[in-house]
Every structure is written in structure tokens, then in C-alpha cells.
Length: 171
Length: 175
Image 1 (cartoon, chains in turn purple, blue):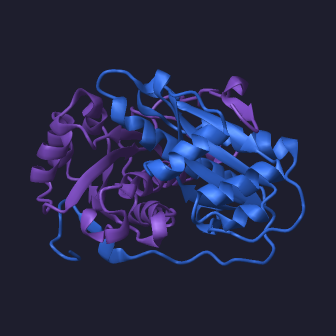
Image 2 (spheres, one colour):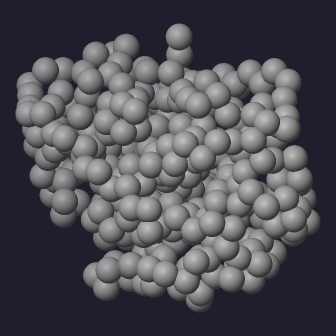
């Protein structure tokens, strides 16, 4: 039985079943287990289940249309006030929030949920309206949105393994 | 609640035991199973086992002394030839971060210890590392993962903090 890494795939269609509170907590525990540069944990999470809010975000970008059907979205945000002075401007929070996002996708797979990563930062057409809608302060940047629900239909993971991308010792 | 996500932690001390070819293959498969923007898979990987190269990296990267003991390092690279598509030019680092996290998690699953060393966007590390590994100019070294069998048991930290969770909109706390 392949583990969650190999089972994960982008799932954009969901049935009506809602995600339980205990599942949401596990998703967020997985997110906060991610590594971060110098362990600063520069993240914040907004969970959205309100259909109206999900629909509004779906209308911001064609890449977010699946939120109309989703029972849950998690917005992974970066708190840029947590950036330590020595690495200011390096934006390590992008990497930390990416790892947290990937952990949510994998834990969702483990829980039998379908999910897809909607790229948000640095797309102007997403960052601005999402910040306004969720009333984010200036130091909180919406980094990614994860659309989540119980999968509708059969979704097989793609085999993307490509040996030519592995280089031994040097390029 | 003990899957690889919750077991992973940074491991910096290793035994002499070698990582097998099959394990390296699984780590690479896990990396390439990561999601990427528009599925462009903008990554390449350099697998390093030569002691001499590992030691040279410790002279380039300030926080990489664990590579003196590590039997294996994987350098995750971004491939600009794949990511230079209008509208997604800036997403390759997110894709490479997801691939890096997958390697750390698969390592945990395999009983290996690992730690993520940040490379991008530190020019003073990227340049000498690209030279050492003879990377072409469209290949950007993104991260180094140090790997080996853990010398001692390392407990994962519990980093769960409910204050970081906000319902429906920003809750106005924790600034």
C-alpha cells in the first residue's frame, strides 16, 4: 500500500459530505508540524466553511472555481512580523508556508479527503481581494488556499517519476 | 496520530550506515510526487554521496556541519527552463519547497533522519554551490537535504498552537 505521498493528487470535485471538526484539527496539526527556517513557524490559518465566503473567493480567480463545491477551505497565511531581522527580505516564509501547505494536502489524503492547492501569493488578483474579504491586517499575507472535500469520482495519482531529473554527484 | 508528518523532526547526527540505492529511489519518487503549479514539475535533483563533495559543501554553507557525518545529501534545484511560463514564473520555489518536504517525510517513513538546509535566495551560497555541482545557469540550487540513519532518538517537537487558527476570517488576536 503506497503511503500518502504517492496517493496524493489534486482533487477538484467533491460530494456534499462535510469535513468534521476533528478532521480539521488534524489537518492543522499536520500543517504546524512542518519545518520552518530557524523554527520561527511564521504561519496562521483561516478555516472557511461559510458557503457564501467560499463562493466569493471562487469568483476572484478561475483557478479557484472548485471552492463553489468544496465544504472547506484553509487559507495558509504568513505573518511577516515573525521574520527575524538577520534574514529580512529573504522571504523564507514562502518556503515554510509551502511545507505547511503540502502537509495539509498529505494529511487530507490520509483522512480520505480530496484537496487541491490554489496558488495565491504573489498573484495580485488573489492576494488583495482575499486579504480584504478575510479582514487580514497588513502583516498577514494570504499565501495559499487549499480547497477540501470528500472526493467525487475516481482520482488516480499521476506517475511523475522521471529518472532524467536525477543527477549523480554533479549535473 | 503518528504518521510520518507527526514523526518528522530535524535530525543532524547520523551513524555510518549507508543509505541504499532503493531508498534513494523512493526519496526521489516522493519528491517528484509533489504538486506543482500547472504541473510543470520545475525541479531537478543532485544526489551526493562523495565525502569530498559533502565536505566542500560544509565550507560553502554556514549551517551545514552535519554533512561531515552524513552519508547522503540531496540538492533540490529549480529548473527555470520549465518554470518560465507567463503568470507562474514566481511559483517554482513553492513547488521545490513541496518536493523538499516530501523528501523529508519519505525519509522519516524509511527510518532515516534528515534536515532541510535553506539555500535559495542566499546568493553567497547559491553561487559557489552551483559552481561546485556544475549547474547550468537555468538550474537554481534551492535546498540541501542532509540524510542518514539517526545516531540517537530525536523526539519531534509539539508545535501545535490553537491561537494560530482563525475561523471564517481574521480573529484579531496574535499579532
